[in-house]
Length: 281
Ligand SMILES: *Cc1c(COP(=O)(O)O)cnc(C)c1O
Image (cartoon, rainbow, N blue to C red; front, top):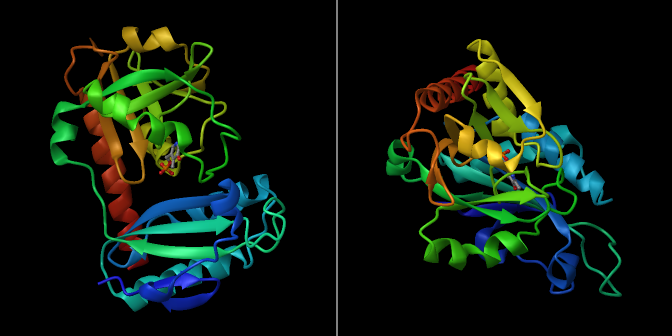
């Protein structure tokens, strides 16, 4: 049972965890967050996520009211207190209680614990369908709480039998709404957009394992039409890991089946996760 959250430095029973209505997150959607998994009571790659959270805060000119070390300690304290082996952890930093409904004052820092979430196993076997959508995320390297477009198009995706969206801007591929995008070209090279995307921690780890496996990796500008010449494609995120993509705009990618390199990278990423957990427990 998840009985506690960590609110502004205090372990707080879930039922008492609240923010005042004047928070700038409510008034203007102003805030940043991060999300990661915990296994065996240990937050995965927590150093990387906490660092990204601080960077997102800085990009919105919000100051996290503690050090990175203190934040990592508070995350561990929450995990210990709730006593669940597996969990999702969400960090949120809001603009705080504003007096003029526009100016940030003192940010509120929340550490929430959620039940462990995982994507349907079947999707990894079959691969998912994506639809392309032209959209440019604002301050793309910051993980802000603004998911207006991603949430608004959920219905459209569902009506068209798609599982996720692929954002592009001026015929340049960016990322999905909550995941990064990779393709494998005909030469077997791993290719992923470099600029104006959220620096995904899973993205970074997958690039690391690909290099360990001796796969060539290119982080560069990727044209939209490269998808239709690719052998394989997948998206990455903390919840999804490596999730194969087999259809884009109703056209098959490669053979339309989950490819070997995607499978290999998925397994290598999971092995890296296990190594991390082993080292921390
Ligand atoms: C969270 C997120 C990702 C994935 O990042 P991970 O650290 O791998 O979970 C990618 N793109 C966007 C827009 C995101 O919000």
